[in-house]
Structure formats: structure tokens, C-alpha cells
Length: 128
Image (cartoon, rainbow, N blue to C red):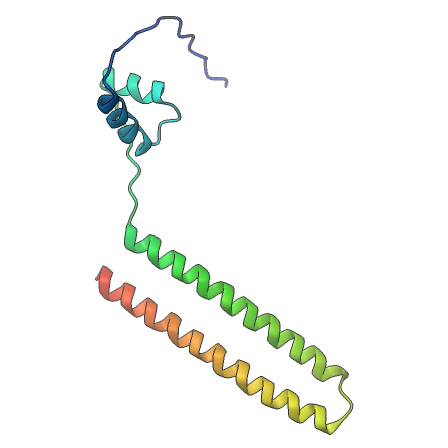
């Protein structure tokens, strides 16, 4: 079923100071309304206005987890490259070099895992 489109052909002019207009725009930007006109109509006609709510601690956590994910992906790519290199090696000396590099990347990988666990514990403590 199609929803009937509402034709709005009446104008309402409201005069405002610069401060009032800025305040109106600040309030509008915090809502889910698609336009300032929609927001103004909803307020004037006493219809519900849905406000966007942002949990700053959750946002901060998400940003940190995104950075950790990028780092873990990079480390995982390095591991894949090293394993691929191992499959094509045919000298014992090259295997020793690979083992040394593997230990370095393994250490970084487990440090990042510990960092993730610590961040998760911090968020758990904050939210409980």
C-alpha cells in the first residue's frame, strides 16, 4: 500500500533573533527529524519529537575497539604472509629467521588480546 503524500501549501512565517534561530537549529540537530520544517511542525502541533541519545562511554569504547580491530587485522595479515613464506622455504636458515619473526608477532598479538580484555573489563565495571 502506498502512503498518501501530504501537500503542504500554507506558509507560516516566524521572526526570530539570531540567538533564537541558533537555539532552534541546536535543538533540531539532536532529533531524528529530516528537516527543520518537520521538526518545527512537530513541536508546534505537539507531536512527539524523537531525540537522538548518544552514550559517550559506549562511543569511546567502540572507537577504541575499532582501532584494536585494525591492529589485530594487520597482525593477522602479517601472520598469513609469514605462514605463506614458510610453505615456500627450502633452507634451514630461513626457517630460523621465520621462527624469530613469528615470536615477535606472537608477542604483539597476545599483548593486543590482553589490551582488549582489559578494556572489556573496564567497560563491564563502568556499566555494572
